[in-house]
Image 1 (cartoon, rainbow, N blue to C red):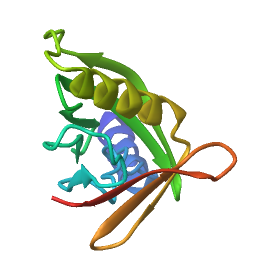
Image 2: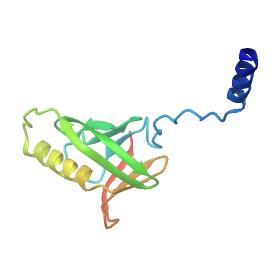
Image 3: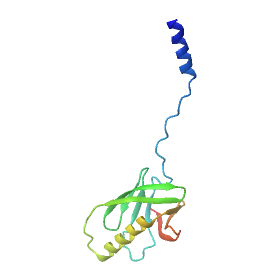
Image 4: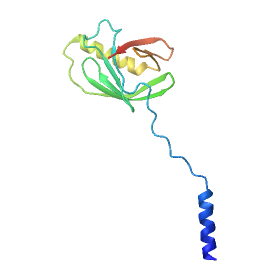
Amino acid sequence: MKRRSLLLALLLAACAQTTAPAPGPATSYLAGTSWLRIDDENANPHGALLEFTDDGASGYTGCNRWFASVTHNGEALRFGAIGMTRMACPTLMQRDTERNFLAVLEATRYGHYDQEALVLLDAQQTVIARFNRN
């Protein structure tokens, strides 16, 4: 009897549905890309830099290094809370470049991307920044 019960239990276990493993984190279509801002005419000549990874973004503001989480769904694109180094920006140009770039990151709601250009848009889908591949 024990043998039959064990055999029946094994047979039922073999027929049971198994669940697939949970999918890993989604890889952003922008992961591994690097972009240099091109539309801020008064910017630091070194420009603001935006680099995407699998789980976020980081870069250079024209004065300090920064990092943030990123969420995206189709063309919807948002940057999470921004962390950054706190070096003193020696020139007014660097301070203005940084302030403007951080405002762009905070206002971003959409991103249009092709092989050579990235355009960030606000909630009204107005272009707020343009980048070329770095």
